[in-house]
Amino acid sequence: MKVKQKNLPKISIITPSYNQGNYLTETIDSVISQGYANYELIIIDAGSTDETLEVIRKYESWITYWVSEPDRGQSHAIQKGLEVATGDIINWLNSDDLLAPGAFNALAREFDLERYDVLCGNCDYFLNDLDHLDLRSERMGLGATVGDTFIRRKINQPSTFFKASVIKQLGIDEQFHFTMDLDLWYRYLLRAGQSRIVLSDTLLTYFRLHESSKTVALSPRFEGDVRKVFYNVLYSLNQPDALLAFMRRAVPDADFKPTRYQVGIPVEEISSFIRVNAWAALIYYNEIGDTASARESIKVARRYGQPFNLTLTRQFIKHYLLPRRLISWMGKRTAYCL
Image 1 (cartoon, rainbow, N blue to C red):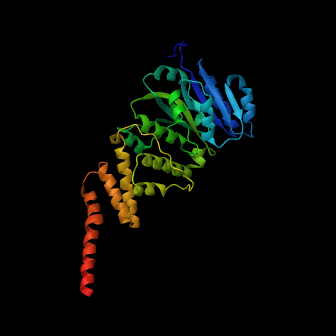
Image 2 (image 1 turned 180 degrees about the horizontal axis):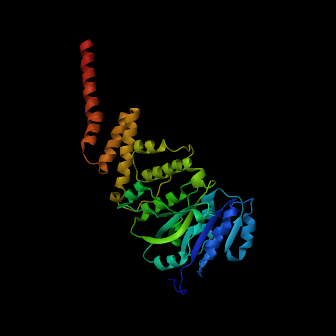
């Protein structure tokens, strides 16, 4: 069912691009063939040397704004697009991905901008072309609390559309080369919680997998960026040094500069995330024999709801009772020897 063309929200699509001219035609076609009157397509190219500029010029009359110049990477390109976007609803669509038919009409129909900040729809994956479609129906995953959502780490950026005022205020953090979407999502959730998110069952986008895509070619480097996001979350929640040091050890970037996120949700909403990472830190400190940091991790886990079960009891005995008895025993032995 198409939406009446009166008072349609304006939808802005930002396409960061670099040397993927062989896919760009399909991406542009998927946007301009939506049959939707009120949209804009913004292409931010990083100075491609392949056929990208030929494709852009071919479709120039359908492109609201474009530029081709060196930039500092994908995150910088998306941020440049945000600065010129004028829509009510905004998302970025990579130059090798596609909008599903009817996506814009579905957004106009389902995204109540008075009630919601974010609409999360479905996304299917495909290998190289749509003849090799993988019907995954991926969508942003929401848990019972923000902390549960963080733990699940189920993210799907292509089909997640933001209210313009919200995403413009949040912006894109350039320090993230691979997980700028995860960072954006977590920052939003920490600030606003989950009450202004609508989940849609509509297929909105197709995500292309191919040998040169970052998801495929550089997947081992994603985890370092993920750990930066996790560190920033714990840092913003004022967690102790033991927990921060545990997370920092998995960040490969020596020049990483932590960012303090705005927190607008009650601690109960995020406690499960803190608790899970405190327990992981405890296991790590057990392995390396750092008793002081292990004790600090136990305290954090208990503070944020770790149940007092047999496993926790063993950890208390190991890190509190046994060390005292050992010290006492060593003192007696020393006195006897003297």
